[in-house]
Picture (cartoon, helix red, strand yellow):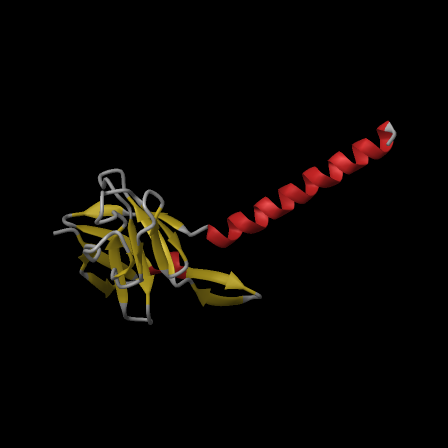
Length: 146
């Protein structure tokens, strides 16, 4: 193999890895929202769930909500126009921050998994996730932190 062939092969391999990494990271990526704490509520604009696809507005099934005052983020799931569920992304096994993949919350430390209602689907965790009351009003979600 001469130098020119070697450089072509390396460049093609690097490009392939870049494309693969981009595709895979897009599958696992979730929308992150920074929310304000007002009184004892996190305020999340409903627009956080909206996205444009082919010129039409569609809605995400979930977003991850963060605030510097919170030790762990919340996963907020949209079940319908008026039904939302907010779950603390803290594993009930040993307190590791969970990762959101579609409708599943996974613990990277020991493999526990939870569904979008906070129920354990795979151990070693045994307890459900903490959930927070969610009220929709004035184009916002108000998540009670009490």
